[in-house]
Amino acid sequence: MNVLAIGASRNIGYYASLRFLAAGCNVIFMLRSPTIFDSDKAIQPYVQSGKAHLLKGDALVQSDVKHAWEEALTHGAVDLVLFSVGGTPSFSVTKGFVISPANLVTHSLMNVLCTISTQSPQPKLVTISSAGLTPSSHAQIPLLLKPIYLLLDIPHKDKMGAERAISHIAGWPWDASNGEPESDIMGERWMEKEGLPAAGTFKNVLVIRPALLTDGECKADKVREGKVGYRVKDGDFVAWSVSRKDVAHFVADAVLNRWTEYQNKCVSIAY
Image 1 (cartoon, rainbow, N blue to C red):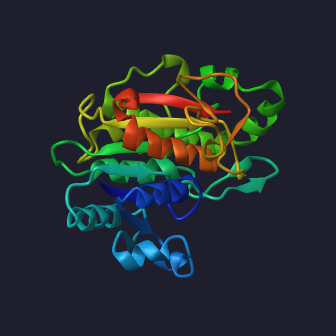
Image 2: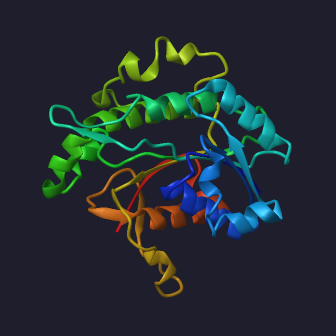
Image 3: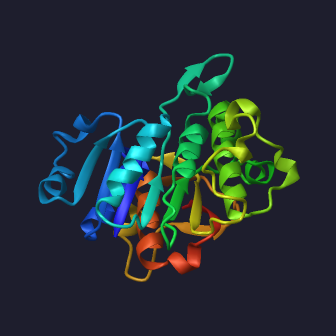
């Protein structure tokens, strides 16, 4: 399996990529700074063996993403695009947590979608979103966590934009109660953007909404055989948190072992 990993220099994308490499996959990392892995003892053996490939590029630059596709295809058809772009937010007293640019995730994902390979079969696409984005999802957030999610309003508007783009190409109905993301997130006339798959033509997708993310260990690696350590359900459910490593465990398991179960879905994950 050939994996194109965008936004995988750390956190969920990084841990999931390690699992794909351990399973024998080729992983092509698009990184703003490939030197980030120079002293990474987990990644370097795969670089030396030719299973991990490091490409310099910025997901905000469409030509860079197009080049990443071209380079990835030199290793054969791309089986999976793992999209886990996410900025490091700063805190503003008046605005809460902010990222720059404010549409970092949406803009980057649109660049991926507008340059996506036209190969057959379509590559799988896994994107990392968040719980609490929509009114129905926010209603499921435990009361004590709601103030935290209110501070995440700006990054969540960005991830809402990414979900809107996915719902369009996958042909999923968009709940009117969600509203439409603003043009400063989506861009003007975004549905007409050159290269964007037509509405309803891209079904090989999985959107994952984690609960509040932690840096804890992977519980799934420690539970008894036949158990998982976390819950995954269609739609939303009341949940507190989940570790980034457990989300990565689910990403790898869903792609490698259970794709027919999760293909063309938006799911939530939590303990």
